[in-house]
Every structure is written in structure tokens, then in C-alpha cells.
Image: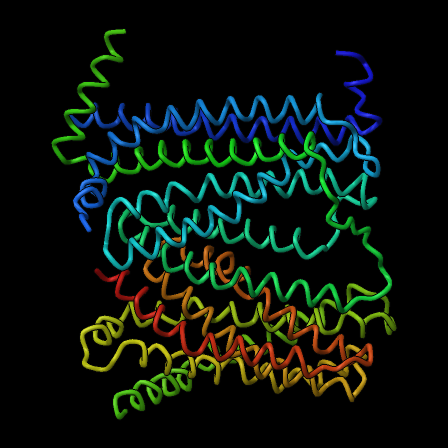
Length: 48
Length: 253
Length: 221
């Protein structure tokens, strides 16, 4: 990618900031249920 | 009309299996569409003639704002079903939707602020849509907080359902009142961009991003609803069998 | 009907015995408004522009102060269980309790608003929309707050949760209530927002007692 692309016409902070935070939110929504599933299964097994 | 499929889906073990089969497809499709949408939005789409490259924030802001409202409606509808038919599954879906919806409401707000700075010259403008979104975030937080305060999951879910329904009636009133409130102050001129005839190479990434976000939200809600069902049904046979099956496998590997 | 009158009379009798309970919210209202003025310059002419917001937020905070106790004391002494098993429709009992709450905590604020408005530099012609708005808005606070109090009754952290749940629901009331005064200040029609407030009040009075009753039943299942 050219340096021009990363500059986003001077709006780099806003564009990349938005996409960065968005990537974080999407990732959290993918990972958080998985981690919770693991924690729940562990407590269920400990109950037995 | 044959309703057996509905009753079968409503039973926790069959929903658990159904969700387990559907979720990976939704997740995979969502990620593919998102990859295309973001690539096309950031690289292929030409800069807007007015907003230059800053317009690209639309590809994260609009999908987030759209699902934030849709998920609130879904949450309130699931709440209504939970109240009327006392369906455990609807309770699980309602509780599962709240954090997903809240996260995308927060995303819509933050990206709205980041978009506002270059376009309006300020991070925050008390614009009707942005303000209504903020109130929506408060409503989501209320549901999450209320649910967390209850020890009994079922009573908590029903209390949340009542709150979500009142919130749903509240949302259009808030929207209308904020618009009226904005019409009251003269002087400040907010840059308004009319609905432009959006060109195809700008529009397709947006549609892809919208569909992707709905798919990924569906994925997250199904997974979270599965978790809720495991917790709510922890003393039943199907959950115990599942736990030994999955947990045993995890311990071996 | 007789049972409802008895509930109403009981609320008032209890209030008469615990004077601090219903004297506190109006006093709190006066103090909030006064302290806000101390935060600005003496005789700041701009204070009048902020007066509607200050008075409305003060009224909101004062109402929140007394809402937590709306069902808590009844729950502690067992009155609530009696109401739940009695033949009186619970939603009507909830309505009467909301009415009593407004009479004890809302009405004093409506009455205090005019002198406080003058202290904040509000012009006398603008007091009309202020007082009318509060008269229509404070019952909304009592009934929306009563619904949330019913949702959180018996929760250990209910007290902290209550304001967080009430405030987003009350946003339109504050916008129209304070907005009617601002509209009058700008020489616009103050009637329209008051009509909206009246519409919200009607919706609140008809729907929320019913939902609050459902919340109470849920809490005791």
C-alpha cells in the first residue's frame, strides 16, 4: 500500500481510529462468548 | 399450519443444537462479507467529492447504528415473548442481545464522534440522531445492570423484559423530542449533507458491511444465548451430558 | 374503591408520622438550585438562560431521592405481600401509591418552582410555562420512577440502580418541560411542548401502573 493510502487524505486519525475501534468491537463480540462458554463449562464440571 | 417445528425449536436442547449448527455459518459469512466490505470501502471506493477520505467512516458507522436500533427492537420483542409465553429461550435471547447491542451502540457513538470532528468541527454535536443514540446506550446499560443485579436468572430476565418494552416505547419519543429540541435553537448551523445519489462503488461495500454486521451479531447472539441456556438448564440431563462430553474432550487435549 | 381510599389514606398517615421523609425532597430541591447559583457569578444575567435546566434537574433529583422508599418500606413490613394477595387490583393500588407519592414529593416542588425561578432571574411571564410544565412533568417522574422502583424492589443494590434506569426514560419529559420555558424566553409558542408533556403524562398514567404491577408480581414469585 502506498503511503498516500495510509494518510487517507489527511484524515488518517479519524478513519483509522474508527476502523481500529470497530475491529476491536467486532473481535470482542466474537471472542467474549467463547471465553464465557469455557468458564461456564468449567464450573459445570466442577459441580459434578 | 403445523407448529411442531416452532415448539421443537423452543425447547432448549434442540435450540442449543440448532444454534451450534447455524452460528459458524453466520460467523464465516459475516467475516467474508466484512473483509470484502472493508477492503472495498477503504481501497476500491473513490474519495467522496465533498468529504474526501473521511466519508469512509460511513462503512463502520452506519452498520453499527443500524444494528444498535434493530437489536434493541429484537431485545424488546424477545422480552415480550418471554413475558407472555414464559419461554426460557426468549429470556436467553433477550439477555444475550443486550451486551451485543450495547457494544455496537457504543461503536456508533464513537465513530459518529470521529466523523463529526472533521465534518462538523467538533467531536460532539447535540444532533438529534447522535443524542438519541446516546440515550439508547443508557437504555442498554440499564437492562444489563438490572439483569446483573438479580440472583434469580428468570426473575431478572422478566424484569429486564418489562424495562426493555418501556424503553422501546421511549425510543421514538426520545427521537422526536430531541428533534424538537434541536429545532428550538436558531443560529448554530449544522452542516447537513443531503441524501446524495450514492454511486455503486461506494454503495456495495456499505451493503456488504451492513449484511456482515447483522450476520456477526446473529453469531454473537446465538453463542451468548447458548451460554445462557447452559446456565439456566445446568441441572438438567442434557446439559450435564454435554458438559462431560465437551469438558472431557477439553481435558484430554 | 374503599380499599384504594384506605391505601391512599395510609400513605398520607405514614407521611404525616415521618415528616422528615417528605420535607427532605423539597428542601433538597431548594438547596440544589441555590448551590448552582453559587457556582456562577453573583447576579449573572446568563443565569436566567440556564434556569429551566437547573429547575428541572433539581426536580428530577428531588423525585429520585424519595422513590427508592416507595416500595421498600412496604416490602419490609409486609404490606406489599398483603397488596399482592388482596382482591384489589394491584395496578390500581400502584396507581394510588403513585398519586400519593406525587402529592407528597411532586406538588411541593411545583409550588416552590415559581419563587426559585424568580431567584434565578426568570422573567415573571415565563413562570407560567415553568409551573405548568412541572405540574404535568412531576407526575411523570412519580409514575416512571414508581415503575422502576417496582422493578428493583428487594434488590440489594436497587438504590444505586434506580437513577440509572429512570434517567434515560425521563429524557423527553425534561426536554419538553425545560423546552417550554426556553420557547417562551425566545418569544415562541410555549403551548406545543406542554401538549406533548400532557400526551406523555397520559401515556404514563395509563400504561405504567399496569406494568409496575407486573414487575411487583415478578419480584415476589
